Structure formats: C-alpha cells, structure tokens
Length: 348
Ligand code: OGA
Ligand code: NI
Image 1 (cartoon, helix red, strand yellow):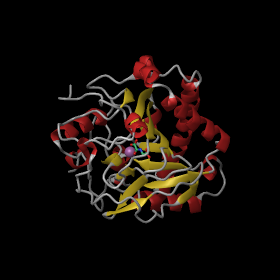
Image 2: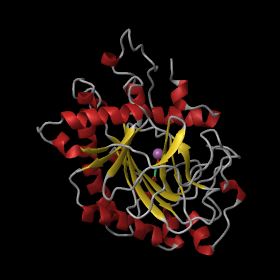
Image 3: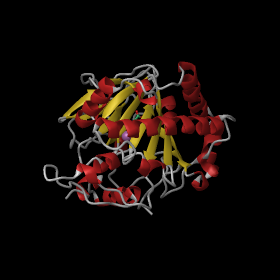
Image 4: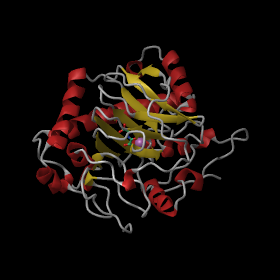
C-alpha cells in the first residue's frame, strides 16, 4: 500500500462551493514540462472522419491523416463515429447528476486507501505529491468478472446501464481504430487489435469533474502524464476547454469540438508500434468560471500477456526500441513510486 495515501479532507467540488483557496498541496510546482500556462495556442490536431473506417469506402486520405497525427501528436479528434449528440449529451448528463448528488450519497462509493477504484481523488504515492483539482469516479469495466460493483453508483439509477451501453460503443470504435492504425502502416490489419480483443478485453473508465478553481494559474486540474493505455477515448465537455497536449516541448490547448471523441495513444501503443506512434504527455488546466466534466475510457491489452514492438516494425533500419513487458499497469505503478518514467524504463 502507498504510504500516506488518503482521501482528501474535502473534495475539490466542496472547496469550490465553499469558496476555499486551494491548500498548498494543490499548488503547481513541477516545471519539468514547463510552466503552467492557462491559455497556450490551440493544438492543430487533425480531425479525422472515422466513419470511413467502418465501411469499405476509400480511406486513403483519412489513413494518411491518421498516420501523420499519430506519429507527430499521438492524438486526433474523431468525428463521424456514429453516436448522436443527444446520446453523448445524455451520457455526460448522467455523470453530472452523479457529481451533483450530496456528498453523503457519493461517500458510499469512496475509494479505499491504497486503491484507485471508486469515487475520490488520485492515489497519493509520495508525501510531496501535488494534488489535482478534480474529483473522479474510476471504475474497472472489463473484464466483466473483475468488476467491483460496490463502487458502481446505483444513483442515478440508469448509470450502470449507460456505462454498459457506452462500453459496447467504445469497444467497437476502438477495434476499428486499432485496425486503421495497422492499415495506416501497411501492416496486417489485426496486428494491434488482436492484443486488445483476444480472451480478455480490458477497459477502465474515469469520469471526472473539474470544479471551477479560484487560482487557475497556480493549480492544475490533472497533472502532466501520459496514459498507460493502448488508446484512450475522451469525451470532452462541450462548453469548456481544459485539456492540453505537449508537443515538441510546447503546450497546446485541445479545442473542444462538439461531440468529437478526442483519441490519444497510451504508452502501450507507443511500445507496440516500436516508437513510430507517440503517447503524448497531456494535462488539464482549470478556470475560475466554469466546471468541466469529462468521460475517459482506457483500453488495455490483456495484462497476463507480454507486449512489445510488433515483429514487422523491427528491422535493421528501425531496431527494437523497447523490451517486452507484462502487466504494464503494475509496472507503471512501480515505476511511478520509484520516480521513474515507465516508458523510459522499458527503452532499450
Ligand atoms: C486522463 C485524462 C483528460 C481530461 O484521465 O488520463 O488525461 O480532459 N483526462 O479529463
Ligand atoms: Ni490522460
């Protein structure tokens, strides 16, 4: 168990309601990735019509855009994904309703110390860890037999069903994206997707509320990190920006495109693609006026199987860049505790 891990004395949401100044442990102080800038330029990340990946229509233009997006930014905005505005509005609304419940009700789903799953804050790994100005509900959704339903809210009463339904949608989109990624590199189309669909599907959901913050130039909503996932599919709040991506040492604001899914790669895809595709560092900034909600779904390969660069992407011109690793989630966690970046630790 992590030393000193605990739930915060007060949720970020409650501090925002009470008009509290963020306590000192929320104050940004890690300038490793540069200073905290609340309004850097917008990221010109490509907008990709993923509808064509579901059909047999001509995909060449979108495949080229995909390849270029993933080799430079490691992310893109996916439009034409087949899910209506009203469906996505309803999804966000259900999580908003959850966060609006009285603390007494949400408390039933509080995460336990030493564990990430449930409602609460980030797990504390070290004493000087800076806290994030957000509250989140984190759930392991797949494999289904590993669900801990005690953390799954029963209020709103349709929340569980909606997560299930959205999970099916996310699964089908992610398979199509994994296949398109393979085709964009002229590889056999299942070479990535098979790691994510055989035997075990692994999917986690993080549903996050970023309350307004009185000092956005001193406090991050979410610290800079790369995702450990295969890919992450993020539904942003249509009314508020906040997500930033790091590219070539500079921060950019991710524009909000109503009902686009923002898709970024995680470390495990950077490894499998032998470094051709990027797992971008990103973070979330807060603002004084508006709360923001986001729905993040993380796909991961089966933790019991080794992953590494796919064979066809290793050759004399491009030697193997990463060792194979098993259970990257645990590996990542152990690296984090030692203050090491997991992607660096698997580099050859
Ligand atoms: C994450 C993440 C971004 C957001 O949960 O890993 O990067 O906008 N979320 O909430
Ligand atoms: Ni992330």
